[in-house]
Picture (cartoon, rainbow, N blue to C red):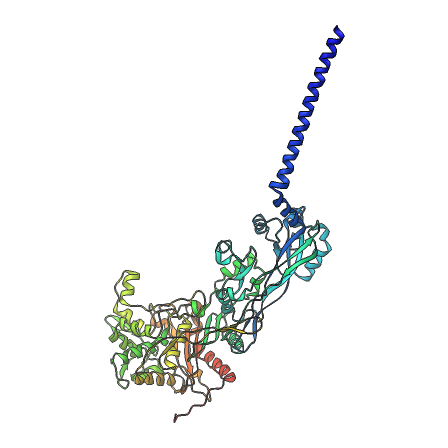
Length: 620
């Protein structure tokens, strides 16, 4: 009996074990089936995509950025091939060691690279360095087995043909910022893309950039491309044709570099067609080489540019605001004539100074000019004559006519950072300084000192308005845009801001005075004279610091550089049928007639060499 009882108990235990085993097997199969269901059904598409992405990748193809040419078709900016070093994080088996190995040969911004990698997808290429040398290319190729996931791509790189020439107009490139990538207007850009950051490169970014293409490629386990499956070529950007003439621009920049003992010279020159507003040349010194930015400027070089006391990144032509000095006497003369304050032939006596209460305002000519009329006062730049006019007019009348000639407002040229200058008035001082206007401040304002501020482009615009008979035209830099095949997409034409509506007699007296400045024996702008073309102009010497009378007669070379006056000269030519205007300022250059006028003469010589003046028929 005991045997059968034992057998029954044993069989029951076996059945229990089998049952548990069966349950475990069933549960295992259920779990396995659920896992298969999860992988194949629920997440199938996702894992299929990952698998495909591991084998097939979509590679972006950069577009060729549009060229920038001068008015005659001379290329100023184009693209050239560049070897760029990239990493694909998913393929980089030991990225820290690879980067450490590369750092021995390359200058790498490790912090920025880590940030870029952290914000990128694993299969996307992340830029390590642009425009590596052929020696660096060879180094990577020789060690590619030690550098999995790191590869070189040949891509277009922006190239500024004449280096620093017209740099402030052309602008430069920089990596698109994370802030802009959040903007829907930049939805087609990716981290690491280069965009215009200043100048025309920035203003016309969406014209120049083109459209990216792509290709789908099959890769091996190391991420190396095996074959191209399909491809959509990129579309090149549109080109810009400028109003600039590189021949005039180049000569002008060379002359600017030669005129000063200081290195580099500080100043600006603008050359503009008086009838249309086309800018033929625009120089700002010192300058910079935009090629530094094309490949990605280092922090050291960038900080060096920012900390440079002479501000090479500043476009002085539109961003430099200076007292206009005696070039402003054109405004004072216009206001006095328009308000019937003077007769052109009536005289004012200049004893060498003007008294107002206890104040004594001296003329630049210590012994005075004697009795002078309007013409003589403009030709010889008599301060006392214009002190007297300004005092009689009042500052608000001066402001009224300055604004008519375009001062105190942006010209509207399509460049970033243009400043409006400043035309002071009683109301302005009350609002800006919470102080009353003083009579002595009107005396200073009448000769372009005090609170008055203008840009070189504003001065060019002002003298153009006088030259062309009263049309204030908007300056512009781009004549047209073209597609990659040279087909014109858009043309730009002159825009008239307003008609000043000069009285013909007033205009006649102003222009005759400016002609005398350059062509009469006592004219302060004689150094701008040309042999066969009649030039008209006005000198200006803008005071930097206020000095005592005894200090002002010291020789220029004995005055510390930063205390020396700024030298101005504005001009137009030919007198009979004006075509072109010039505005020159040399910072700390001293007297306008001595420093700025010779530059204007050379500019006009260069311009008329390429654009001979139209013959003038006095009968018609």
